[in-house]
Image 1 (tube, rainbow, N blue to C red):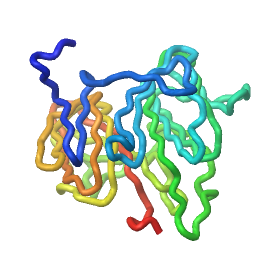
Image 2 (cartoon, rainbow, N blue to C red):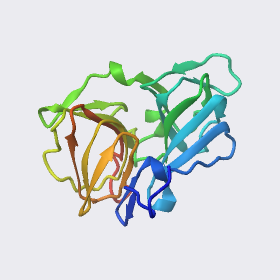
Image 3 (cartoon, rainbow, N blue to C red):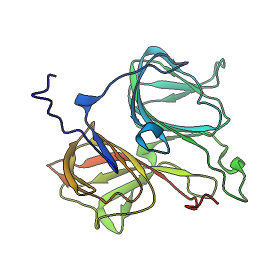
Image 4 (cartoon, rainbow, N blue to C red):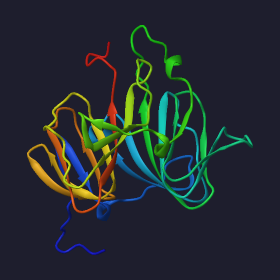
Length: 253
């Protein structure tokens, strides 16, 4: 699609990024074959994690994460096989299924069909007095099988928690679904940073002192303490996948 005089909804500020599909750029990464990546958030942006969309050709392979790096995968399209490198047995990941691989546990992904998936990577932060072993199990799940919880008692805004909660885990990934007209009850300002991909529907996102129309396919990064608020618009629910760092002292102790 041609831009008219460079117009786009995409916007980069000191404490947030709205990245729309018309500005996505694909890049290869070392070790992966038959896969292209859209790197949405990374340390060069100021993020303490990496959020990518991986686009697989049929048979494409994403090797295990680098040493010390945790990886979370959520399938958007197609079907992936999760397996130990060189092993015959594998776990099937279809649309809406997800997997978490702790640092030090090698798993590769192979595309059984042309596929797209969210890939979130973060260096593991050990907590004083806590062993990384507490988070050393591979997790495979299906979002549809996880019970939805109302946020703050509001049945029109529902959260599904895809990661375990506890001292062994240093980040969380959830989906949030808003009925038409539902909104966050407050403008949030907090120490966690976020990555967010709009999966369905749309609405208005406040980021800092800016207000943005957003829709399915848009990516958002929010730095710590970025003021944030969302309200769903339209006749269908709005849904997004969201990351936050979690369960660690701000001083790193």
